Image 1 (tube, rainbow, N blue to C red):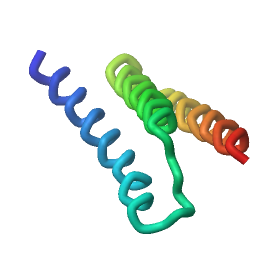
Image 2: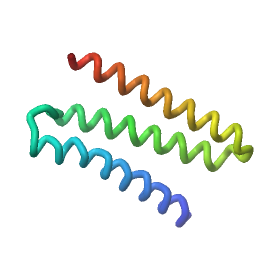
Image 3: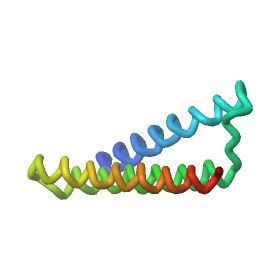
Image 4: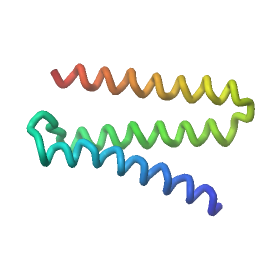
Length: 89
């Protein structure tokens, strides 16, 4: 039980650290202009990716399968992120 809480804490703190990057950049430049909805969507997307990777690490024991599944999750994340970024322009 304690290990699950520790993993969840790591996922959430990593998510917060990644979301701080555009938040801090918004303070210094006008090139980064995220709304609350942008932060909410990216937070949800990163949280799902973190949970998916944690699930894979817990359930899959063969390293080659782990690598393939995690790569698939990350590629899926990048594709969704790219589609969302194109929709802005």
